[in-house]
Image (cartoon, rainbow, N blue to C red; front, side, top):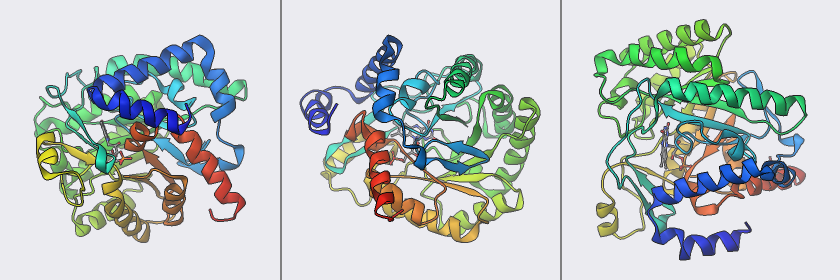
Length: 363
Ligand SMILES: Cc1cc2nc3c(=O)[nH]c(=O)nc-3n(C[C@H](O)[C@H](O)[C@H](O)COP(=O)(O)O)c2cc1C
């Protein structure tokens, strides 16, 4: 769907519908199209150029640009999403126990800012079900690779079950890690969502150290190999706390950091104050995150050894912005909100733009 067509559909149809219903409709459409064989056709149009291959976390990513966590919480549509050109798809957040998430409405658009506010609350059907789905996906990915076709890297992002108290967090994460590490190319410990009460306290170093150690050991033991482990942090951490997480990651020889999640701040928005307050509580995402996300990236890169991956996420829309993150030291770049506003050919445009910048020797 060319950009003007998607923008028109967005303006006249999607923007009048509940955002979560649009999300389900679009994902269902993608899956049906993929099942009907559109994946093979799409792939010809969207598969990233081999020149974009990027080595990170001990693997080859087909492109440095991937889909951030939250879009496919249950590994329902990894291959249809990859067929749109994403080099990796990070599924989740998955919790050990299935849970419904917060009451709806829980996803709101701020169109003037091309932003979203979400308070989804980790709605997902639990680690055991997601594992079964990922087992099937992994078999299909192996077949794609054997056929020399575009195959994504699949990250799995795990979080705490809401009803489990913070004192029980380590055991809860361990259940998810042991079930999901065997089917993950990399694993992410999410301690930065603002929508699970208390979760962000796990970013405190004294809580984070034992959590990461236990999850890392469990993941490797369950998978029988080293599963790259990353931690995802909030843009709302103070600089000194960002530094402390970076130092912890270095000290523990962790594989990387994903920066950043959504913010609880409402600074820098152009949407009318009444619209913002009506949107309610939750994590804000989109271009309003750009400045803080870049600051955190630069801070992390300046403090971490080169071999530690930094995956930069927060507000990127264009290939130029992805290229800028790479120049600032990101190993890989992710996005989510841009997908909602730019449409299904977003990843393809970013990949094509990155190739163009390469030809001009700007990346
Ligand atoms: C609707 C929605 C749901 C999200 N759910 C998750 C989630 O479950 N786990 C997670 O780590 N991040 C989640 N995120 C955060 C994104 O992965 C990303 O870090 C953030 O939105 C900033 O990137 P963006 O500006 O490109 O959207 C979610 C974001 C949105 C908009």
